[in-house]
Each structure stands twice: as C-alpha cells, then as structure tokens.
Image 1 (cartoon, rainbow, N blue to C red):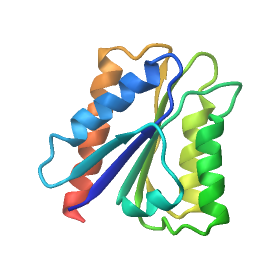
Image 2 (cartoon, rainbow, N blue to C red):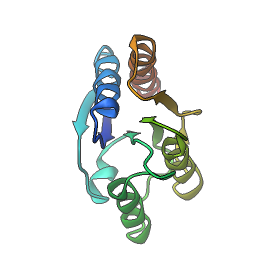
Image 3 (cartoon, rainbow, N blue to C red):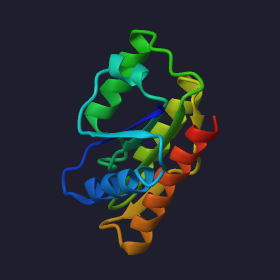
Image 4 (cartoon, one colour):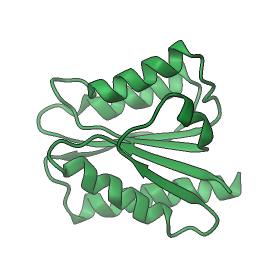
Length: 146
C-alpha cells in the first residue's frame, strides 16, 4: 500500500492546521496509508512514496529541524529520487520556506514535486484549508495511479 508522510513544524498552530487538512484530504482516497508526524529521521524518509512537508517561514528561512532533516538525508545519500514531494506553510512577511523545501526536493533529491507550494499568510482561512485537503487528495490519487 502506498504511504504518504505529512511532516510539519508549527510554532503558532497555523502550519499544524494546514497539515491536518492535508491529511484529511489524503485519507479520502482508499488504498493509501497516511502518517502525520512532527519529527522524522532521514532514514525514515525512505519508507514513504510521498513526502509532504509543512514549514512556516522564520527569518526568511525554513526551520532548523526541516533543514537538518534534508542535510542528514543528503549526507547519508538517502535515495528519494522519483518519490512525490510537496510543501506548504504559513508565513507573516515573506513565505520563502516552502519554496526552499520544494527546491531541495526537486534539485537535490530528484523528487517529483508538486509546484507551486501552498502558502497561507498568517492563519489559514477555510479557502486555504480546502486547498490543503485538495493537495492531500491529489497526491494520494497520484500514488494510486502510479
């Protein structure tokens, strides 16, 4: 059964709301296993067919935990080529973090990324949360077709 990891970091709860909505959407598709996590090791990334990362933007960057995860995966030569990747997150001023994650997934790891990343300025409204559900559903459907 295809497996999706929705990995997120959230300090204020905004990115967490988005992560939960992504999971809700993915779970509407039969035959896909979905795991929501606040932490993962580089080695655990190999276990999933799709990796969806939720990261807020702090000081024009992604969080240290997300950055360290991808640095560890690169150092350990974790093979993510061909896996589906996507990113989302909330921000207050600039919103670079999800874009950086997509760039790393695509250019460093050769993942099949969904672009552009999904962004919410401050607290995600119902429209953004619906887009999060749609993102989860589309990725799950893509895995079933694969």
